[in-house]
Length: 184
Image (cartoon, rainbow, N blue to C red):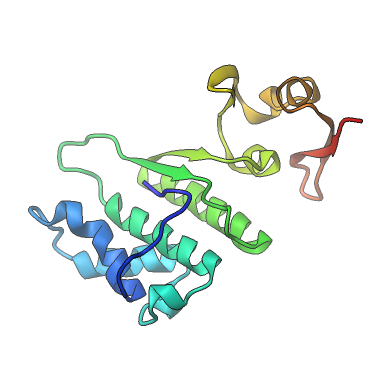
């Protein structure tokens, strides 16, 4: 689980915090715990921060370190073939534009390669359009629509749920996007 806002109360180095992701596996550790931590840090693009104190990092760097911790926790498939889920609450909130896209592309690719499910809360609908396989739109805790992002995230739904005007467009790669403005 990667919470939206995670603060670290102690002076951990980045590597130490990512290693905490392996704590649930302490009774049955992997044959190479250190390699899992290294791979998770590389996947989240934080290897270069390994020896830095977490408190001295920017908000975006801390968010990527926390992602590495969560990845380390679910890195290996369980011996009983139980499903693995990575739960992400606003994983892009503290990230700059480049890292928003890199993070979601990395998580999507990793999940597909590893056979891991990902459930992410996103408020940026264009990121959902680009990276999600399915979306669920909630309004005051009630499900309003579910399905493929391009079919669900329509101008009518956005107006009904968020009272905004939206116009579907395509980006340079042909991916659907929404141009959104506030209703007058």
